[in-house]
Structure formats: structure tokens, C-alpha cells
Image 1 (spheres, rainbow, N blue to C red):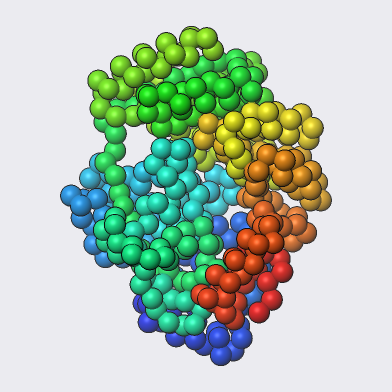
Image 2 (tube, one colour):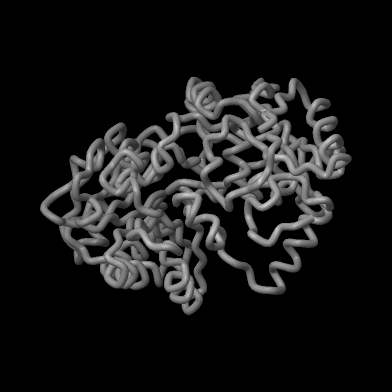
Length: 413
């Protein structure tokens, strides 16, 4: 396989134009940490953006950072952490599930994947923090979308389309992102022994309260078997845990935690975990460590299921019972991680049939190539939505050069 290592944005333009002329599809990578996600693509040319790794500007007082797409995510997180700031959407570290090198991703990969963590229920997703982008389209031309202020849109917000597009619309070369100050303090309330449906009700009550909950997750007891790291401190003999996070200045967090514990008293007496220990718990939930590649469930297919939060507990409980799999809930029940027993289609047919009834969708985040080649990794779209998606794709990349086949199996030029 030919690897084209670019030095700057001009090289990206030239590489894309050459690919168009040769009718050669290009795989787009930063560090390649997420190449095992998505449909199995067939290409013998890869565009490597890892040399585009600079921070163009960082204005901590303005809460804005502009960085090249190939910049290592770990380095950027370290930089903004030195100013006590963070990406509020809490980007997921996929290396835990995929078994790749720890923290090997890039900023461009973070935006292209758009995988937000537990704080998404409060802060929004990656697209909500993407202020602007410079990218090369499938025409081989550079375009700029958005800018460096929050309110910069007078028409269609093009840069938002790039978040979650998995590199199929353009090759991002530089992005501008909003950063936020880190909370001074955090407390996690822990409820024990709730079944999935009751936990769903408790999380809904907490999220509907005035106490500004920034994380709501539930781990059934069986999912905690063999837990290590921060979650091991919570594990009991098949005892479930329901976690609710509060963040802000210390005095506010303490008072809200007391009030929320009172509100939820009908679900049991809440324990508390504070500050660094609390942060470690939520990092483990964000990265789905119960299903880690290095753990006992490392060989199982893992699904990322999004559904209406009120339906999450009942759906996940039924899915685990019918398949013999394990589930973990985030986003108050709106996000379900499911590690299911091995099967030729990873249970895609029955899973998606069940989701149709509640208006959910599922993406197969981890599976062998043989499985990913046999099924739709990303949830099939309704005909009207699929037609719109195809028109958007054609407007950015009419020859289907960029990451051809990454998101859909039927992806001919």
C-alpha cells in the first residue's frame, strides 16, 4: 500500500487532485488509531496527515484553540489542561476498546469520529464545539468554513457536517475549537442494586431536576465482573451501580449533591465519590473499560446504540437477556454500549429490528473484518435521508475519492 505523507495543506490539495486524475480512492489517516472502525475499505493509497501537527494559535482567555488536523490529541489535551481547560464534550479514547496504542489519536480523528463522552448530555457533542475548519474537498480545492467566534454563521453551517463524517466529505487540515474551563470540583452520587429499568427512572429524575447533572450512567452488576481500575472500587457481588455526576465550584456541588440525594432517596441511600476519584470513574465509563480489548470481553463485538433515554433501560435489559450479552448505559439511558456474543452478523438483524420500534440506531464499533464486511457497520438510513446524504457527499466529493466505502457498503463512484 502506498502511503502519501503530506507536509502541508498544499500537499493535500495536490494529492487529492492526483487521486482524482488517476481515479484512485484515498484512505485518510492521522495516526491510524481508528482504522478498525467502519466498513472494510479497499484502497492501495493512504493519505497520511500526521505531519500537520502544529498548534496554530491558542487564546486561553478567549476559550479558543486553532490546531492542525494531524496534531496528537494527547498533546493538545495536555496543552489546554495546563491552562485548566478542557474539551467539554469529553472526547472518547477508543484505544481502550480497540486495543490500539494508548492516546494515539489526532484532533482530526476526534472531529471526524465525533464520539463524545458522558458530558454530552450537558455540553453537546463535538460538532457543537467546532467553530471553524479548513479542509480540502473531493474537487482538490481548499475551503474554509466557520470562523473563530461562536456566532459566525449567516447560512448553512458547513463545518458542522464534517463532525462525524469519518473523512468521507473532505480532508480537514486545520480546525478551530471552543474550549471550556475545568470545574473546580465534582461529586458523583452512587446508588447500588437498581435494576436497569429502575435505574433508568432514577437517571431521568436526576436529569429532570434543577441540579444540573453532567453525567448519568448505569452499570449492571454482571458488567462489573472482573472490573479493574477505578470501576473495581465500585464492584460488588453482581451488584449494579448507578452514577450521577455534579460539577461546578465546591460549595455549589456540595449543596446540589445533598439536594439530589434527598430527591433520589426512594431509590436508596447515595454514596459519594469526589474530585479525582470521581473523574477517574467517568473516564472509565467514557472509554467503556468493562469491554476493554485487554479484558475478558475483548474478543466480543461491541455496539454503540443510541435511543430515546426513556426507552434505554427496557431495551438494554431485553437485549442482554435475549442475546446473553452485557450492556452499559450512559447519557441517562440514551447511549447503550453492548458487548454481544460472537455471531456471523454480530446480532445486527435482531438488534436493529428492535431499535426500529423505539426510534434508535446502532453502530458496530468493534468487530473483526469478516463481520464488518458482511453487514452495515453504520445504521442503514431511511431512503429519504440516504438520498440527502448522497447529495451532500456528491457536493463535497463527486468522484467518491475520500475514504470510499468507510460508511456504506454500496459506495461505487
